[in-house]
Length: 343
Image (cartoon, rainbow, N blue to C red; front, top):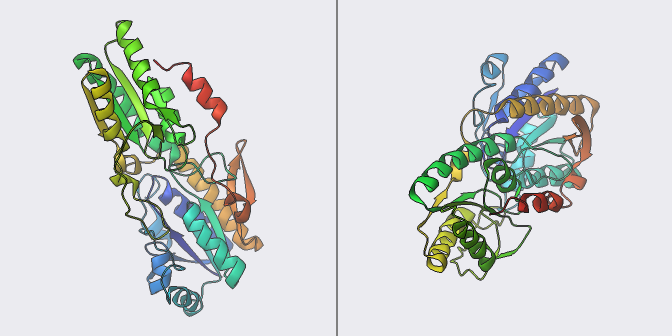
């Protein structure tokens, strides 16, 4: 059997451990492993390499993905779907393990359900918003990077009596913002799931300053909705129709509004792609390996249209249809707990 492996969407730490897990288990099953380069683009263009054992040696601690990635959607451009289907046959691919988030897995599901391509998914996204799993590859490392940034921002905020706004990734789900904010001691956390008013943030800061705490650190997810704050919204979109939130700069806009409303010197930091880079945490290495091994076993079992997922510390099988039915948004009970520490 010839098993294709690809990584789609934004890169995150932990992809290489997942590739390694898939490959090493496939070798045990006696399968050939084909690396599809740059996500679904590699299947559209027939751009592949053989993933021999030497290629997956020494990659466990390496960030990013040795296969490359892209946000290519083979259902978007006319002719790309047929190229994809043709290349599956030409390359002799008996199965495809697609490591990626909801966009990548939506392609996996369509290829399997509508075109009979044998696909298995592996959940990856630093936003942690894929349904059916408690944690996705890349989330834990991203939180660690954000918490480190929080620790550093606290010292300069206190030294200069400033308000510092840290913008982190999170389009529809505020997992990174909430975890980093709570662990890093944020004075306010803005997430997409909970609309807040600019006046409430202003009141929180003024209360802090009145109590003699003459600094503040706020965490805001890139997709957060803040009422009473006018901002410029970009129309730029990717191949899956998502607005390019990196150009929205909600953190900078929030900082400008807060400085005008409070008179406190305020600065913004957009953490951006730093969250995606570098060495994966031990948790993400373990998660990538475990999910990769189970994905290879699913191939052996012919369990198409499923993905391995982490639930209560166990790896379980979840239908892609279930995983994609809705984004896994924040547990609002946890947000209520975070509010205890606001201010």
